[in-house]
Amino acid sequence: MNREVRVRFAPSPTGPLHIGGVRTALYNYLFARRHGGKMILRIEDTDSQRFVPGAEEYIIESLKWCGIEIDEGVGVGGPHAPYRQSERREIYLKYAKQLVEAGWAYYAFDTPEELDTLRKEAEEAGKTFAYNYEVRQKLPTSLSLSAEDVEARIARGDQWVVRFKMPENEVVKMDDLIRGHVEVNTSTLDDKVLYKSADALPTYHLANIVDDHLMEVSHVIRGEEWLPSLPLHYLLYRAFGWTDTQPEFAHLPLLLKPTGSGKLSKRDGDKMGFPVFPLFWTSPTGETARGYREDGYLPEAFINMLSLLGWNPGNDEEIFSMQELIDLFSLERVSKSGARFQPDKAKWFNAQYMHKLSDEELAPIAQPIYKAHGVETTDELAGKAAGIMKERMTLTTDIWELTSFFFVAPTEYEEKLTKKQWKGDNPAMLAKLRGVLEGIDDFSKENTEAVVRAWIEAEGYALGQVMNTLRLALVGAGKGPGMFDVTEFIGKAECLKRIDNLMANVTPAE
Image (cartoon, rainbow, N blue to C red; front, side, top):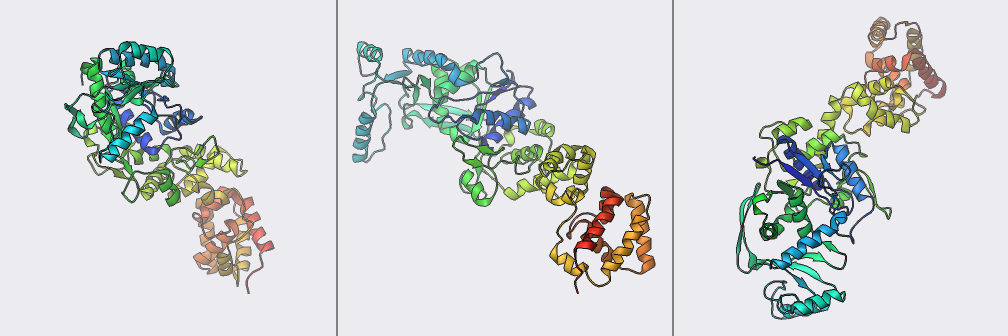
């Protein structure tokens, strides 16, 4: 690659960022880092009707949580500021006029009523209406009106748009880094709106071409929904005389529903119980949507999972750090066909990452969870408790359910375990065990286990009988790690207190 790699992620702030958008940002980021390039964040907020307050902040926070670093753009700054299109509006009118003057675009003054009439005529003739070379002369445009009339209409404040003048019967030859060579005849395309006087803002087509050129973008990596717009974008680069600096294009495959049919939507997540957004979202009207962060996913696992939806590393490996993804990533290995989202696979990825975390890494994840349940503890103990149980965890939200007994003594006892264990000789046996535990000075896991096992053997008890009754007293349920992990963690005084509590408050079964 001869030129500096510069890519951009350019979302619209119309709501929460879909995970398909996160994947687009990720692939741009991986490509930029792989080639020592720059990652730009541009906010395309020219559609004022669909703008949603809070969406831009959500996008920035989402990328930060995912570990996708922005080199230039909104929130960071850079040599091509501003990076919000609404703050660049003066730029676009100049370029729209340039296209009109060069004969590549024209002013159109038609009203919705005039367009409706033409649509009805087309329907009656059994045709599909298209705003193209066949109709542009029939409407009030700068192609059919005199120059004086055009100037007069603009001067008196008539609403107008600038439309691209699509060439007639020309083959546009294009290359896509994922899909290969594509050819389209311009007679199948319509004259797209580039600029609207009503809100003094450009449409996506004009704004993104102008901004990509001015921001020296080398590669446009975006979703396949923009593939039908590629001929127009190629022609716009030609119209401006920018073909020598035109970026290379790559259109990513769709993220599909778990069933494999159709684009993944929030409705699919709601129906099947998984999020389709990175973070929890509350709309200005109070509507909410689940997020991977709040549902208990680690950002590294989320990114690892997302990276493999549409790209393969060329080997059988599945677990990759961000740096390993950067080292391996190439657009040649991105699939042309849609990638089916698998909620269970997302959980599997998270479980793999949970199991690899050290106690030190678990502590900052566990501490907010413990605090939310009124538990104040040290980082060391928070990490240790989570670490003992991490092999059974899938999500960070499992932490409290699996480790609460380390910090909170049981006040209720699982009915099934109580009926099975709290009867016969077991209460008397537990009273004896209490005396044994009280006599132990070194309450480390290893020493306590050695003393208790020797006592069990000497007394002739069954190991399961003793351990399960002790589990009832200390945990209150048939769950948890080995009992000597628990005794060491909670300490001698708490062990004795929990045994006393069971003996004092639960009547043995007959």
